Image (cartoon, rainbow, N blue to C red; front, side):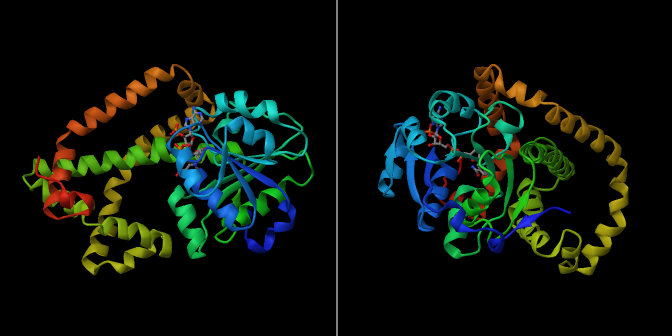
Length: 338
Ligand code: NDP
């Protein structure tokens, strides 16, 4: 059974007097910095000279270069993008580490796959929000809090866990619950979700669209039916609140009978899906993906650029734009017809 920590397991005394350095004031950094400050901690921001720096200044923080924040703070939150973090760590953070300091990661990736190897004399902990930055801030303000995966990679002071939980509480995360897991397991679950669950789900959605459009149904009606109405998003929310299977009870009897009686037809897909998913899992666990993503970065950036261009040119993207426009969904309501 997984261990989950709540407010009553976390003591703010463990972090009393710690100066926190937020290294990177982006999605997570801007939210975490404000939450920690509102919980009474002394926060300094380390950022390069960019628009985020201006935002941090406007939010009332003292902003210094990353290396200066790393030198001055006791608890260092590494919140730059994961792919640049090893370089930032080596150049700006590692030279300023000293006994008693603590490194806090928001993702287990770099430490879990040994792309960053901190020295033995610092505490190394993870507070990995299961939430985007805006949600980290909003749920702190609302009092609801946000769930995280947490873990201690290295306990140099003998107080790493207490300090991690104190920081998680100050962030607003123990309010919702912090599940203990290793850095590598957190990173593996995250990557699996992105590289196996997401793409498999995407293929099923594309196949459904192709089947219906080829059968002559208007693309706008197909996309509306499958996901653009928001009904699917609502069902996902109910999956969270009630359970994936139990939320079926909210649907009509026709829907329940049809879904349950026809599910078995798709069982044939299981062996192939499982084989592909096991391949992805192995690639992640062995470190092969981390190695691939760390090498020849320019080619990877070019790949993302080209894939985005291909996606923009797909009929589905055009159909989505048109459907969102005619149904006045979100910002598309104001877009002109292409
Ligand atoms: P962002 O992409 O928002 O960037 C964070 C900051 O790093 C920005 O200020 C950015 O400035 C700066 N930065 C980018 N490149 C460099 C560089 N070469 N040197 C110095 N600073 C740089 O990051 P996120 O907040 O998305 O991610 C931070 C951490 O949080 C990651 O470990 C991520 O896995 C984790 N996380 C993120 C979640 C999310 O929802 N985004 C959810 C849970 C965890 P600029 O862009 O101007 O270069």
